[in-house]
Length: 242
Image (cartoon, rainbow, N blue to C red):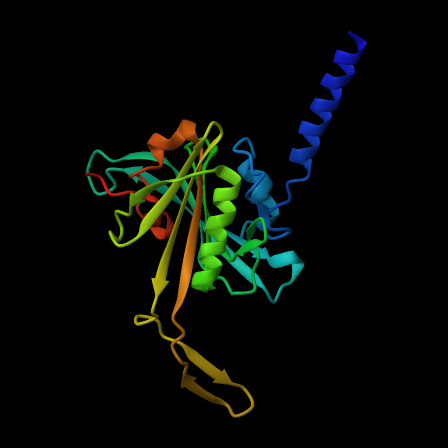
């Protein structure tokens, strides 16, 4: 009996420490491999991040560096958004600026520069979306191998956003994982090169690359996620409905 009580205390202590170690976004990359949907949104985006200048916005200095500041905006999400009988189903926190050196989240040895979070009406996290931008085809393939090694064989689905894209899905008791990679030829991207020494501004060269999107979904909230989040990076989440 004594041994069982001790084991229970240790288990509870370990469980508590795992949550205590979860740092706010920007203080350390969000650990996707060990992420729990029991995580409170206020621990990821604490009160201190709320912008003093913009409503419904969070300003984050990456690792405390004011020169590497990103902003997340909070907006309502609706069912039947453009209908008179629209119904609010939660909130979406979207990162609106990023650089290729930012490390907002991590899975194994792959870092992601951009993050989005969807919550229920009472701010329970129901989906996390992260983006690895400006990567190579090899980088994307390696990430898929890491996901397969962790979660096993995947199911393949066609993207509703672009039928040429393949969504890889893994279903586990505590999470649904979806992964998709797109090619960006930068045909619609405007790049500007500023030379401060010469005081000149020029058009930058196009740099085609791959972009990988990784999503974690709470199985208990999937009815409010699949087919319901149709803006921002979450458009890559949805599968084609036959």
